[in-house]
Length: 327
Image (tube, rainbow, N blue to C red; front, side):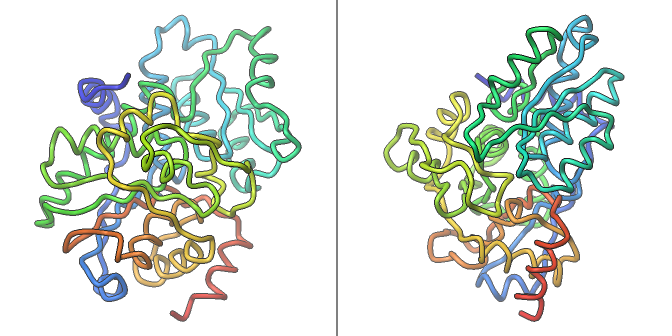
């Protein structure tokens, strides 16, 4: 289980390696939301998402002899890129297992970061764990899980430390912190940090409609699964069920989960581009979408939305701008 002590230790290892991403504001977004909106721009992190934090935390904490053998990971794209870059910076190899239907930009970027990419048929029911096990039977690589890894959670939690101090600088002390959530690694890491450093900041998970396993699980206090594994443009936050390590943390520390539609994510992408001048992918825009369009479920005079990633295919981004670029 990850602890705040592990988050603090990860923060020391990440010093000088990770970007302290900005907290952005816009009076136009405040008007839309009806309250003060702060956007933590993790889309500006190395490789375009928060995933570099967890990847560096996990790989940097490996014993030297294990790290030298190389690492293996499975991901739809953002974790893939984070692991690929962190492995390259540690001068070790990375094998990344990615679904064939992952955004093309994420597959191409992972290859460009010197990782070996192995594709699998997610839509057809192929099991990524079985693919990884076959590779690892001969290569003996160290598995870096996308969210259910204590050091990955700890690394993601460093974003939460930044959020608490940035919020204080902006004189925001009582707010929901909305986090785009798949397996829950970022949300649970941030929750640990907020619990340590803030009295009145609370994590809320945000998921796409039809893949709201966390929202449903938090309501009943036990992990529930999604029926489908594909079917949303929010590829970065589609997971079958809450993580074994992450759910207990969020069940203890998070508020009720929120759910948004794909169209709301596209709208949020366009508004973020127009008013904040940042590019967010659909899954990375879910928290902002909830902030802007579901304010009746949010408490406080201010809200913090984490823009978790910006790795979006050109066609989807153009679609968002063509539909909602003028509003």
